Length: 636
Image (cartoon, rainbow, N blue to C red; front, side, top):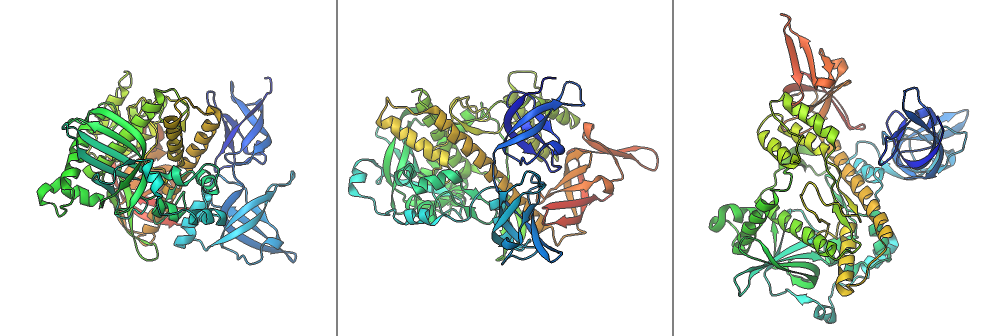
């Protein structure tokens, strides 16, 4: 076999081996002994080598071309040997299989057992471990702030803004100059309000609504004009791009922009004049678009509603506790439902429930509950989708370089696997047609209220490709849109800020365009940071779920089997969605992962089986807060 050199990105696992990822070809496996100094996410060069498996190739790392990150969070272990003191940082990340050596000179002011943020400084060619230095102590493991801050750093985000960024933010003026207002379309006299979660402080979007003289309805979707305040290549802009997104953990938000902007200057707060970038639609009574307009505006939000307030008006009408702007909210709800009904003929309907935690003053979880998406949430969602879709179409029709939010078709192998699994439960998924989307919706509807509902929904989501930002527009499969972008949240997403700048540029100078290569690089970066933010959020949820069960060892819970693997079964508790492992050493069953079941025989020789999606009773056996792991045992 001819040996060749290939460049790419490496993805490592907890065993120390990894894969060189290739887009259109099979990934190349790299054994631990051949991985050299490559770490997860690094851009590397490998040489292909023969494999023991026929028809396969393996790789050997020749060079690390670009290090994805050189900062890691871990626990500091300090040792003494022959009057010499040294330390190692044992990384939290399971994909970082090398401890980081810390010389004695860098150990001053740091203590054994602390969680620290450290940086790789050198990696000698003959050394097994890299050398590093400690940047800061995060506190001791198990403390709420320590763990939450560790998650932020682990996924590549920063807790604080640099001084020069804060200084620049402090210079931004709250007052809107009269000459700026005169350049914009004025909506200050049009009924306008926001609908957000109770705890929200950064208000990205507001809705205005009024009846026109011709009987039609004008709906304005007004988005905070962040691009007016955050100019390209400023320190604020560079830091926003570096972060690319706000990060939402269980008990805190790590914002993309300093608080003065995110919660103040840019936020569309009630009873304040604000600058916005708007999509304005003239609709008939069925929500059909008759005319549309895009441009810079000035608004005045008359009222700030929580979702609960708006939901009360929708459910109770004239009997609701809230009187202000009831008719406007009900009108928007009626339009949103008509728009949604048409959209759902082409979209996939996932019923996702989000975990929320009731925390005490120290951040300890007292209770876990789940909020379902109600009409008020769907009202806002529908008009945001409308704005995102129409802005994307407006630019796509002009054939300009742009930032699209794309979503590819689902993975065929995973669909096949899902089809086999649901068949075990008496459901059916036909994947031999062109109408997979409709068939998926039928499946999701058929499992509602069944014990396997959550499991089937999770597996269905796993079949889907990941949405990302791209210059090449392939449409959004899940939503069923030919054109889609992110326009509605520039306070918390950098792609939306890019979209605002591009839209304004093309409105002002219709013949202009930009370099698509440079724009695509920004899309790739934003997609990467978005994925890390999502992982950080899930990690914080998992930590709190583990913490919630810390004082519940020995207690029994009802759960659903969500995974069957060779090392055991995963069970998700019904009441709180905490997921843990029943390891094979604690099972008196034979594991059959190919058929998604475990089985044994009773005293009479009759086969007993537990399948994926079955309801079981488990006891909390052990909880490891540091590893964020939960271990159960089956209650026979």
